[in-house]
Length: 217
Image 1 (cartoon, rainbow, N blue to C red):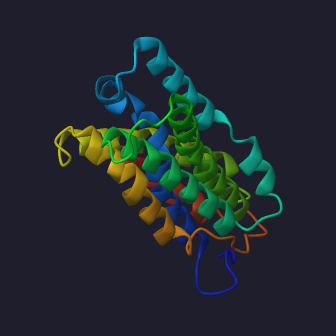
Image 2: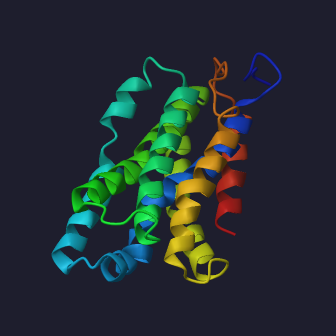
């Protein structure tokens, strides 16, 4: 069997940790769940709400900076930056919705939502780049697997919102600002580069096939 890791931790550990990070990265897809609350509690009109949605979309898709930084910086630092963006961005939105901070300017909330959703790009980029390096002979499979989990994790957050959180937008924002960053901090140690295999290992394809079948059960 081909040697995949010089040490005690195989790259599969980092791949499993990446799935949990993808749960946090799905935060940008939750805007429709609390957008009505922004409109009713903060008194925004439809045009302002649309602009907030634009901030969410821009933040989610602006990943060029973490993509460049991944070339020189270790994964834990990029993951830490994404975690901080998630905490600060959604934390400010939560403070505004709960009226802990009153009279927050619209531009400040727009910027906070931009930063919060931009955390998704940092988190996704970190786990994608790291795991594609750890599995150089299965990059396409790893990329498709992890990107697929983002969509599934968005559905998981929606189910959490509807079930455990009783459709409470404030509780959801609390989860986004505290719960998801905590998950990322717990996974920082495991998302790291491994010494990749120098040759294609046929057993890896079987493991990936099992993982994909298990995902759709």
